Amino acid sequence: MFSLKNPMPEIRHSAAEASGGADLGELPSWNLSDLYAAPDCAEIKRDLDWLKDETASFAADYEGKLAGQSAADMLRVIERYEAMNSIMGRIMSYAGLSYYQNTSDTERAKFMSDMQGAITDLSNPLVFFSLEMNRIDDAVLASLMAESAGLARYKPVIDRMRAMKPYQLSDELEKFLHDNSVVGAAAWNRLFDETMAGLTFNVDGVETSLEATLNLLSDTDRARREVGAKALAEVFSKNLPLFARITNTLAKEKEIEDRWRGLETPQMSRHLANHVEPEVVQALRDAVVAAYPKLSHRYYALKAKWLGLEKLEMWDRNAPLPDEDDTLISWDKARDTVLEAYASFDDRLSLIIAPFFDSDWIDAEVKPGKAPGAFAHPTVTDVHPYILINYLGKQRDVMTLAHELGHGAHQFLAADQGELLADTPLTLAETASVFGEMLTFRKLIAEAPDQATRKRLLAGKVEDMINTVVRQIAFYDFECRLHAARAEGELTPEQINEIWMQVQHESLGEGFNFMEGYDSFWTYIPHFIHSPFYVYAYAFGDGLVNALYAVYEDGLEGFQDKYIEMLKAGGSKHHSELLAPFGLDASDPSFWDKGLSMISGMIDELEAMEEA
Image (cartoon, rainbow, N blue to C red; front, side, top):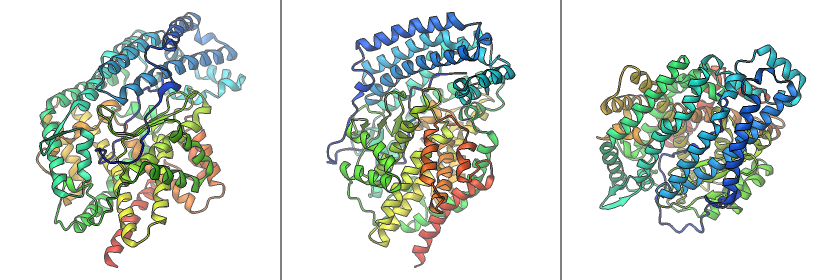
């Protein structure tokens, strides 16, 4: 389906996130006025009124007539569609970002729900577009594009839309699914978000938020980590029936739609959306799973030794090293570190990310009701991205800031492609973010004053990479097994827990004890709910960046220019075209081994430090 850009951002959860209370300097909050001044402002009503007229006019002009358009007329059709897409994206970006600032605010929740309903209704007349476009003969479309360079520019997005051609339903069913979405998956997503935002956890008699409790898992005090882990397990287990109901319902809904469409696997729709071949994803998955012993199994055995433990408990997974520097990093210092890291690679990137700090495009303070985790949302191409993080002054927070600013720079550079071509498939969407993290890490390690600091930085980077690659592929396996099992019938909470624990044992190895209640920790991962099978994109991005960075370190001539051109391309090129200038090919199984070898090499260095 030719669909609206996803108006809701993907939330990135680190292994341990914000708590609160430290004096970190003045933390920025969003100013959303570049989108709209207020929920009741005249501009929103104006735009909704324009959409009502334009969508009806668009359908009247073209429904049933698309196949007969000339090249010049077809270009005008797509340009009109793009303009509508932009206004819809602006409205939903404003509603979504406002909601994520405080998900417990009933007025914000109502406004977002009202806008979702309004946009769903207003876009209903547009459903015909993808259906009719997919019925046009390939030769006819090729002929039209040969006549018009302007039309040919949109070929990548038309190709992605037409990838769904074999799985297209009747016009009536497609319209029904479109209208029903607001009370289907979207409603279950909202229930999940609001339930999660409202959870509180009893930590030594104090009620704390999800973010604050997750943050305890990286506390220097092992007793505090245990308290936090058990508080999480208690609440997740208590709410297990609700989360199992949400998961069962969404998985069944997906199975029904996939079956009607004739999609071969539950993952197929994600692969099509990502414009990536299933065998490429399978090669990535297989390479990572095969590397579990030399990555996560080996690293956690080393970590147990550092902590003086025979086996790690799950609350030790993200524990700081015994000599961890717990000095908090001020917001100003974090800003300077990231800006300097980006500038050391190319001044053009540092100039792009500087306005995020100066123009209130970042929301950094931890606040009641604020969405957990972090994300960068591109909004629309004639505004700018917005970044949300929960900043508490830890080194991991600085890396998260570098990550999200990479997204922001990518989205900013791709904006010139226009609304339909700027969006990057998820497999490439993590490229600039992970590369930005790597730049920041390399700056920090180059400035390390001693071996102990270097060890801490290396260990922290290895943990982040394991969380990005091993953990996310384990998540992907969990989803694959869960959806396969759900196709056989409804799953009890205990059955879902069992699937979770299978992949945890496989990915983490024999070096862990798993506490009672850890089997419920699948419940808080939002990607399982919002974006099934999204998670492999993180591992894809990490592996891709590791390979890219190796090319950069090898001194490829013109690397910076090639890299920035890749970001500017947005979604206008296939991953094979984008990687070709660097001599890389993601379809080659050895490609993934290169990235994994970088992680393994860092573990080699850590082991060598032990032997020195």
